[in-house]
Image (cartoon, rainbow, N blue to C red):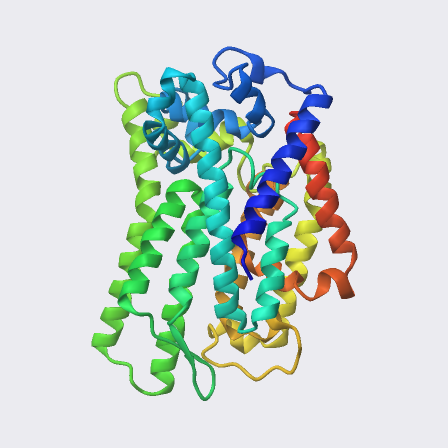
Length: 426
């Protein structure tokens, strides 16, 4: 299946729909028209203003000016940095268009290009994990029609994060396993491990939840240790090697987070220190998220947030069902990272594949954070780059649970119109 052309076509369609909606419906919030929004009132600015709402304004501001405001530290640097770098390529156009327009075009090219790359690798990863070409094509098509389509088209970091994380997962899984007598045996080629680690590190520099990608090499290490114990091949050298490789990848993936925290410390904790510096371990990211977005354990569980929990409820329900269904079929498979797994007689490719274990654990970790710690209403766009979401829904969306198809399309179309006109849809 050629996924590239449909991916481009759907991006253009979503943009066109948002452009028309923005033209016919008055914006709820007019801040995009204020000086300093970096979305100029020009032909190019008006063409792309419909996909430059909400967090888009923060990314554009950081790309132009850097982290000059405390609030900006809620957004990781990879995406705005790429916008600034790519604008250098388009610099010759400054003779005919403004700097704001160049940055706007750069942001759109990076987002749309990243989305196409993520769709390409979603198809390849699905083929590796599910071992069913037609089903993989179908799940890739679902990704193209994600309920968070507007965020995969807008000037947001989700497309870039999807491209980096999904391509990293493909390299990690493509030649790293074989089916043994009792379960899966992982053996990751060094070059693929290095590729995956680099891509995961860049994904973490794009979004903070990229740090959870460490779950995948961790699961593979657990699998290798259990298999070594099972085969009585475990020794000190093996433990040191596995520990070194896992710690090394973990350290590299954590570097972007350490860099963000260190940069915040140098900005606000020298001279006249900010209140956040008074803690034993100053953390600019957690401080800003808590101060401006009320992020924290159970802090978002307030009566006034009930509408946001209702908005997130379909994705929460789907996630709980998917995670529980996979674990319940073969708990031993899940808790041994597929070192032990029984043959499951089912046509459901998601349930059947032993390679899905780390994807389910990754899904569960994201679910816990979004329900109990973060702003729950961002769950749909955060989960839009989870491959396991589309694998689980692959054979259900138009058969057993047709209501999910309705949810997909309602959220897709409602999201386009709400986001494009600056109504609450984040």
